[in-house]
Amino acid sequence: MKKVVLAYSGGLDTSCAVKWLKDQGFEVVCFVADLGQGLGKGEDLDLIEERALVAGASKVYIKDLQEEFIQDFILPALKANAIYEGKYLLATALGRPLIAKYLVQIAHKEKASAVAHGCTGKGNDQVRFEVTAAILDPKLEIVAPVREWEFKSREEEIEYAKMNNIPIDVTKKKVYSIDRNLWGVSIEAGILEDLEQEPPEDAYIMTKGPTHVSTYPRYIEIYFEKGVPKKIDGKVYKLGALIGELNEIGGNHGVGRSDIVENRLVGIKSREIYEAPAGTILYTAHKELESLVLDRELAHFKEIASLKYSELVYYGLWYSPLKEALDAFVDSTQKNVTGSVRLKLSKGSCVAVGRKSSHSLYKKELSTYGKEDKFNQKLAEGFIKIWGMPYKKQ
Ligand code: ARG
Image (cartoon, rainbow, N blue to C red; front, top):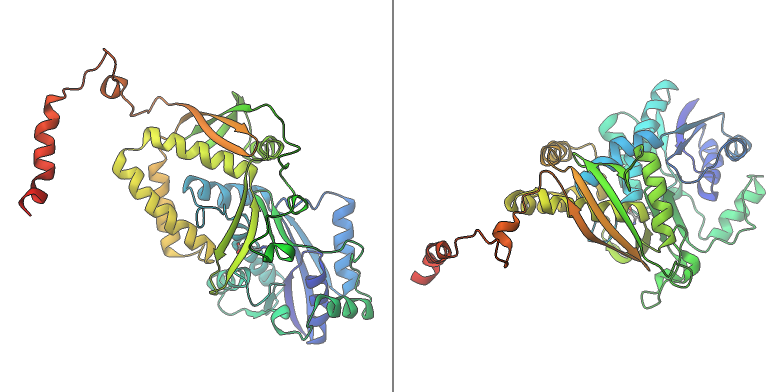
């Protein structure tokens, strides 16, 4: 019998996919990746395992990949200041290659000939899963049940689940499509498809809305060492705990929301809202510190690299030569990115209000308009003459 390893979430789509794959003649092994989406511990995990087995899986793997996600995916993206179309910190996009990596690994261990996922044929995630799997093992067959099956609506799918005794949670009415991990939440569909509507408060998960946030601003200081965040207000944290803490603090101040009509890789424009409290705080602080310690040319070039980096992540090209080369470039830019940034969080906004570094390139005696001024203004005249010379001749 052919064997397939399915990326399993416990939701309706992947639960129906188990049964559907069995009907196609596969033995189905389920893989649940914990990227900090709030699977909980103990009982919750038992429940998800049981659900997969009842749906027809022969075996279930559940792996906590949070540490690897933080060190090998989130951190490089943070150092690169990767942000897609100016608003999306790529939480979902960063998680996919990691899940795909383990799908392939488990397929090898299980001697399976195929891997499967529950993505639709309209999104980016199918591309990320499949391109990654193809890069890591081109021989594996890829099956995408949701692209192939005949259900026309969610109702039909629920009917199929009921008929086949597939355990699902239909008590909760599904209003949005949500993908979550410890770097953020992506929320789409439902009322959000109406571009003229402001997202309703109930769409948000990690952040408080304007009527619930604290009325007082919160000042917070983040310390980085070679581009890696290490401390909050002088207290040392492991990166995972630091992100957790900042999600909490940022969420309480409504920080990290964005609302975007984005360009999907498959050519469709779609409206999505995102929440990334910790990501927004760290991104803001990191960029601020870089502006202090990177010289102009490096800083400007790094912006170009950031743009490309975010595209590669979004396009599913995590394991590509250019992304690898960009990581090497980014790492070389981080050697002086050590220092602290003080931020003010207030009613959804997050702005840097102070910064310091022993590698600072700021020279007060050059920029000051006060009496400590050491800049020889007479030199400017010659500089401008030469700088403007080619244009004057024209
Ligand atoms: N648009 C985002 C991306 O392509 C998120 C996709 C998943 N979103 C969701 N709500 N399920 O990375």
